[in-house]
Image 1 (cartoon, one colour):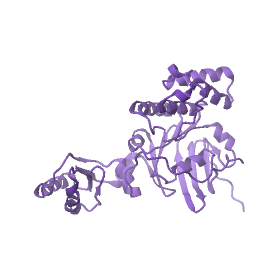
Image 2 (cartoon, rainbow, N blue to C red; image 1 turned 60 degrees about the horizontal axis):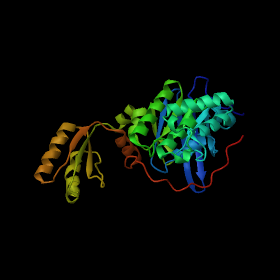
Image 3 (cartoon, rainbow, N blue to C red; image 1 turned 30 degrees about the vertical axis):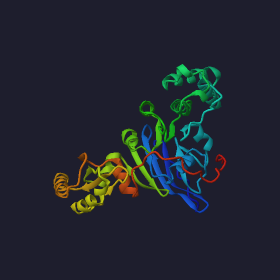
Image 4 (cartoon, helix red, strand yellow; image 1 turned 135 degrees about the vertical axis):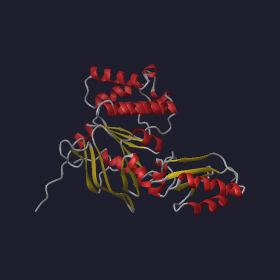
Length: 341
C-alpha cells in the first residue's frame, strides 16, 4: 500500500526539514538533518566549519537537491513545488551577491523586477530599502565603489525586496564592523516583528544568543541538539570558573593542579592562556583554586565565575572550541543546477 505524502498542517512551522541527507562523493555532508521553525521566529544554526550548515542552506533554498529527506518552506514542499518556495524565500549568502557595475538603486530595482514587480512599485521598494539600510546617500553610485559593509547591507536589502515569508541569512555579519552588525541585528528583529521567519547561520555565538528564539547545533551533518539558548545552557549545567594565566611557562602546572578540583573536563585556551573550569560548586571551587595557585606561586590575571554560555554549550556538544570567524572554506564539489521538479 502506498503511503500518503506527509504535509505540514496549515498552522505548522514556516520552515521544516525531515531527514535531509546529501553526499558529495565519499563525503557525507548531511546525515539526516531535522529542523523546524515556527512563523515569526529566528532559528539559529550553529556548527563548526564543515559541519553541514552551508549545505543545509543550499538544500533549503533549492540550490541543491537532497539525496533523501523532505523539507517545506512556508508550507510548500521543496520537492514538488520549488518555484513556490523560491517565490516566498529571501537569501543573503556568505558573500555579498551584488552587480558592482550597477548602482545600489539599480541592483535593488533589478531584483524587484525579477520578482515580477511593476516598474513603479519596484522603484518605490528600492528607495524604501536604501533608506532602511542607510544607503540612500550612495544610492546612485556604482556598488563596486561601496565598502565591504555597504555591499553586505545592499545584499541583505536585496533578500528582502519581495517581503518573503522566510529569510535565510548565511553568516550575514561576517566582516561587518560593530555598527554594521548592530544594524543587521535590528533589521532581523524588525523582520520577526512583522511575522517573517529567519534561518540564521552564524559563527558568532553572541549573535545567536541575542537573536535566536531557538538554536540548532549541527555537527558531522547531523543536528545534535536543538532548543532555546537557556535550555541548551541547562544541559551543560553548573558554573564556569575562568582564570587568566599570563605566564605561558606556568600554564601546564596550573592545569595539573586545578583539574582535580572538579569532575568535569577543564579547558585551557593555548592562544589566550584562559583556563576554564566547569564546576558544580562555584564559590568553593573558586576559593580552592585561588589558594592552590597562590601556594604554587602561579601568577594570575582576571578571574571570574559565571553561568555557562553558548560557547560552553558549543564546546561540550561538538568537542571543539567556540565558533569564531574563519577563513573561507575550501570549495565544495561542483554545484548541481537549480532543483527543478
